[in-house]
Amino acid sequence: AGPCDIYSSGGTPCVAAHSTTRALYSAYSRPLYQVKRGSDGATSDISPLSAGGVANAAAQDSFCSGTTCLITVIYDQSGHNSHLTQAPPGGAASGGDVGGYDFPVTAIGAPVTLNGQKVYGVFISPGTGYRNNEANGTAVGDESEGMYAVFDGTHYNGGCCFDYGNAETNNLDTGDGHMEAIYFGLGTGYGVGGGSGPWVLADLENGLYTDSRVSVNPSNPSITSRFVTAVVKGNNNNQWAVRGGDAVSGSLSTYYSGIRPTNGDYNPMQKEGAIILGIGGDNSNWAQGTFYEGVMTTGYPSDDTENRVQADIVAAKYAIGTMNSGPALTVGSTITLRATTSCCTTRYLAHTGDAVNTQVVSSSSSTALKQQASWAVRTGLGNSACYSFESVDTPGSFIRHSNFQLYVHSNDGSKLFGEDATFCTQAGLNGQGSSIRSWNYPAHYIRHFNALGYAASNGGPKEFESATLFNDDVSWVAGSGF
Ligand code: AHR
Ligand code: AHR
Image 1 (cartoon, protein in one colour):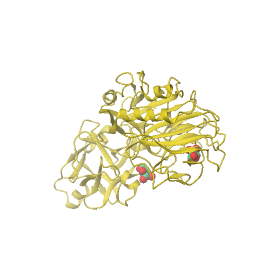
Image 2 (tube, rainbow, N blue to C red; image 1 turned 180 degrees about the horizontal axis):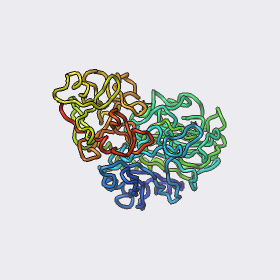
Image 3 (tube, rainbow, N blue to C red; image 1 turned 90 degrees about the horizontal axis):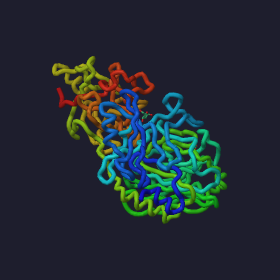
Image 4 (cartoon, rainbow, N blue to C red; image 1 turned 45 degrees about the vertical axis):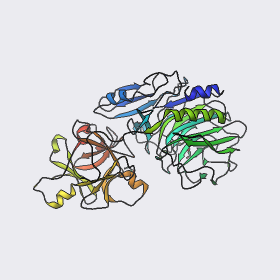
């Protein structure tokens, strides 16, 4: 049985079920998600390998070979047609895509395995997010509901709001109690858990909560596991709960079960029934996190039902996937990165001061110029499965993106710096060498454009994101020096 079969047998069936990794019903064999590729704009549905099985990631890899792909739809498996698509602009923020929509995510940002088989999660960067304002069957008003989601416990920030669950239907903050969603991250200064986070909290609108107060709930622990199961539920009798656990082993703990927060207008709830992923109710889109699977139910699931869902998640065996592919880089080695666009095959990724650029370098160049174009490969500062590139002539400084331009900046030790300075590799999109994508914005690749370095998406809104020559501009041949 899948999670939604378990909820059904508990009398609280799923009314929405989303996952890019697997079917959430044992009989489900229809599409899980849709990808759209950069080369020609064509779309393809990715389905389970078999009914109830894991996603056919190989179909995605082959459809997206030699180009980029975005996740454009996450289908609702429950039959309620509550599919998730790019989130529209809201009261707090507009996205950067056409019409102020948030960007969709790249399809390759979150590779994992389920029982040894490769699949992809939904890697939410700030500015990306999904929504459905016309969901069917989700709780409205003070109706009861349950939710769970599986997240990456190591991918989070303190921006508002990495949520999955029930939100406003008009993209606006319509007041306390108009949301009931699972939140994961460092919180925004309302209720928090023990330690320094991240935590599983509930976004009830105008506040992230862990109990009935705006304070520390020491029973809600900082999450340390790579995969986390997060549960929020609320009923029509001023009762709600936050639960969580390691999605790979063990059982769920109840972090809180009791009355609604008393500091605002949370009882009765005034849920609106839209579904959000990766954003806040008013399209606050500054958060990051990774979603693998999640559902919303009708009725208030019993702890026992949720415990059986957790056992099913554990049996699915989430494990880390391979972040790098294509030509291997060796941590500790010093490399050069030669451009492959026909204009520029004598140019190398280099820097002048703090600006990353390309420069023509050869064996007869000065030592200073050769060093400006040489990079020490380091373990990724923000994710040890990927890489950082330390400047050879400025030790302690690394290539990082800021506002999607590349700089060589001194490592200030912050979480944001480490993440901005972490890149993962794959075979060059034009068939030569490697393409090098940002870890925290994996739709963005190291690109040269007018001889400057950028973290560019394929066909994005900025001039340096032009689809023309994108594959060539993001393909670099790594060498061992001059
Ligand atoms: O409750 C936290 C956030 O506050 C909500 O997600 C958003 O709608 C509002 O800005
Ligand atoms: O480059 C994109 C983002 O811009 C970086 O993550 C951040 O440092 C800056 O705000």
